[in-house]
Length: 86
Image (cartoon, rainbow, N blue to C red):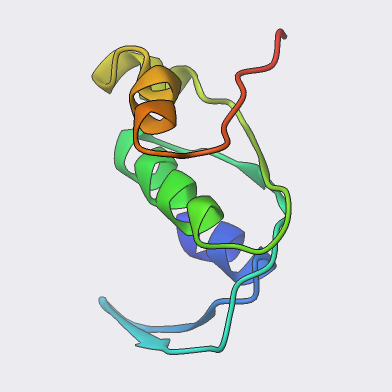
């Protein structure tokens, strides 16, 4: 389900059965996204950090189950990331 979210950022991904083909693009763009599980949430954050623009990721409660205070840790390495109040 997170492939659709990455596509919203401009990713060139096709699914064929149990395989995904990812083709490189020049750059991703920011977009409003929805996290679907723990690993998908982490992949959306990594993709968002690679964009030129703002990305909002909703339903981040998945992240909190697996990564304590991830936004604080990412800020320490230079990420411009804010956790908004719900």
